[in-house]
Image (cartoon, rainbow, N blue to C red):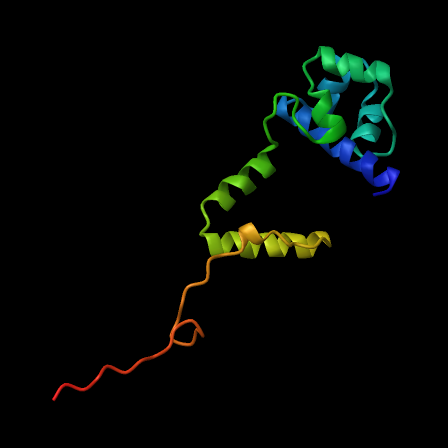
Length: 138
């Protein structure tokens, strides 16, 4: 991932934190002590924040760990990830396996975890099942 892409992600998470406080761009910028355009540039990933600004944001209760890394400092997950996990946990084993394969494919990674492979259910066409006719009663 390029530095520009990472900066955009940081900006998106900064915006998410501002919205968590239910603050407008203008009011949040005023509270932080910066110009509205500067905050907009940070949120759009057009400009990197300096250490002083990060310290001010931290003093205001912004989760700096989340803004910089995407991981909540209290160990909680962002709403999208939390919703994804909640939905995933409601799936059957076969559906979970399908989702893991899909995610691996979309992410361009290899999925090799055999422990996640669904248990196969025997069917009439399974080689493990052989049809044995019952002896005829006479």
